[in-house]
Amino acid sequence: MDHEPIDLAGRRITLGDVGDENWRAVADVAPRDEQRVFVAALAARYLLLSMRGGPWNSLAVSADDTVVGHVMWAYDEEDGTHWIGGVVVDAEEQGKGVGRQAMLLLIRLLSVRPNCREIRLSYHAANTGAAKLYTALGFEPTGDFEDDEIVVALPAGRVPVA
Image 1 (cartoon, rainbow, N blue to C red):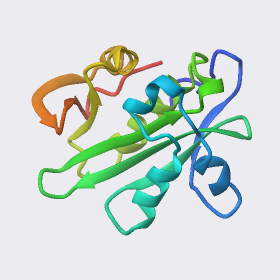
Image 2: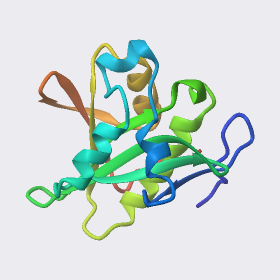
Image 3: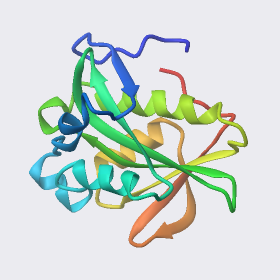
Image 4: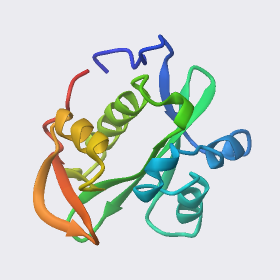
């Protein structure tokens, strides 16, 4: 990695497995009330999706040693794309650069996986904060929609820098 993943508060941001020692903290991650139209009220919903045998893989987002968020990813074998979903930063931790650093880490993690040709995600058009972040990271609209969400893509060879 060409930069240390540090948030605006000077904490080291990491992605890690969800296990016996941290699953409760991850499950309790909650966005701001007004964001609940875009994401689940608690990250617990995303953990359940990961645990139910589907394609999703949950990761804990930590600032130093404290869980502050959740992200998940999946691989679509049909078209060779990797997907990012379930991005939630705890309400009290937002605005500190945690989401940006977590996304950079996850993009780098996915881009080096075998057969990764493109990374996709979707977001609701009214979620202007997400739109701004994903555009800044180099994601571009594909013209596709997932339900009522805009699908954006980042070619694996265009990994953003800090």
